[in-house]
Image (tube, rainbow, N blue to C red):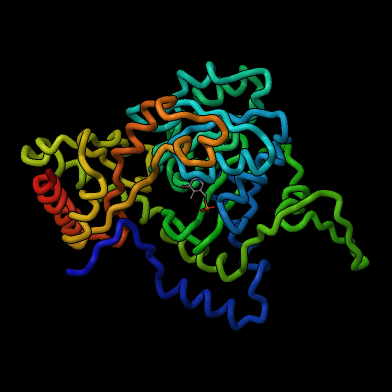
Length: 374
Ligand SMILES: *Cc1c(COP(=O)(O)O)cnc(C)c1O
C-alpha cells in the first residue's frame, strides 16, 4: 500500500498549465499574477486591502513594523505555535511575552491574557492552531479595552470563519501563510490583510528593500525593508488553488467528521486519546490532532505508524522549551498546558485528496500501534 503522508498538496492540471504560462511569458517574478492573486484574496477578505508576500513569517514581521512595534515593546502570544510567531517579535527588537493555552481549544487562553499585559504591551498575536479560530469577539473586546494592536496569525485558518465571517474579513492585521503544508499553498508564500488606516505604500516598501520609485526612473530608500516579494510563478499556483478553497475546506471537514465517528467506536474510545474540539462551523480542519495518552512514547508511536505506511507529524512542541527561548529566561513548568499538549500532540493524515478508506486505515493503524507499545 502507498505511504500516506500527514499532508499532501492538491495541484490540478489547470494550475500546472498556469505556471507553465507564466514561465513562458517572459516575466516570472512579481507582476500581474501577484496583483491578480491579491485581488482574489481581497474578495475573500470582504474587499479589504491584501498584499502578498513570500512567506507567512514576512507578513507577521511587516505587520508588527506597520503597527509600530519595536524595542521596548512587549508582544503577547501563545507558546503552542510554529516558532515563527515568536521569532518575528524578536526580529523587530520587541520582547515576546507568552501566556498559557486553554487546554481544550489549545489556543491562547483569553482568561489569562489580561494578566500578562503590562504598560509596555503593544500588541497581541493570537494563533488559530489547526485552523480553529480564537474567539474574535472576546479577543477584540480585550484589545479595545487595553488599546492593543492585534496581528492575527491566521497561517492555519485561511478559509475558516468566526460566527459566519471569513477569517481575514474582519479585525486588525491578519496574516496568512501559503507554505506547501498549509491548506492553500503557493509553495512558499503568505498574505497580509491590512487595517483601513494603514499606509499601504509603506507596507509595499517594507516588502521590498524600502524602495520608493519615482516617475522619472529615480528612486529613494527611507526605511529598511526586507526582500519579501512573491513571484508570479508562486501567485499562479495560488490562483489555481483558490478555485478549490471551498471544496478543500468542505472535504477536510468531512474527513475530520469521519475521524470523530471512527474514534468514537468502543474499541477506539478505549485507547484513551484526547480529541480536539469537534467544531464544524468555524474550523477549516487544517490539521487533525489527537493527544496521545499520558506516558505514551511518542517517538515509538510515530515509528509504529510509519512501519504501517502512515505519516504522523508533531505540530508543535511548546516553543519556550527551545534553547533560544530558554536562553531568554523561559523555563520548563511555566506553561503546563502548552507543555502537556506539546508533548502529546500528533498530527494524523488529513488532506483533501484522502479517501474515507484512508481515514479508516489510519484508525486501524492507530489502534494497532498503541496496543503494541509498552
Ligand atoms: C506556517 C506558519 C507560520 C509561518 O509561515 P511561513 O509561510 O512558513 O513563513 C507562522 N505561524 C504559524 C502558526 C504557522 O503555521
